[in-house]
Image (cartoon, rainbow, N blue to C red):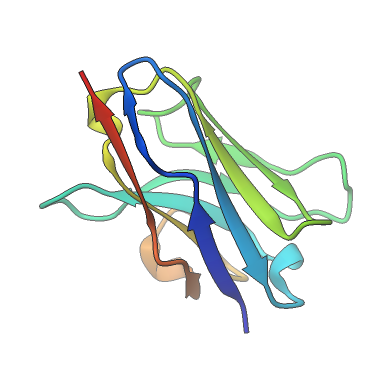
Length: 126
């Protein structure tokens, strides 16, 4: 069993930066892919970023939604069982509740992930 807790969301102005954290408990977390998703009011939950797992401590495969590519960076620290999402050059359209998710076969779809956090609110104002 894996439990996920997100933190770091708050209100910022356009162009600002935030770092979200996803802290996990559970022995298997470090061997799962992890992703960040987001959901804005009235919209479906959408993929943001993914990080794989690896036996190497120096390389993890990552990929991003086109809308955040070049602005957001996902990383993981398995020693802390934590995944991060560094968000730079934030825009009002980034406003959403951000969720982290983990699962043995996770890729870009919501239904591929087994474990979810409760979400953290990010609000970007003009």
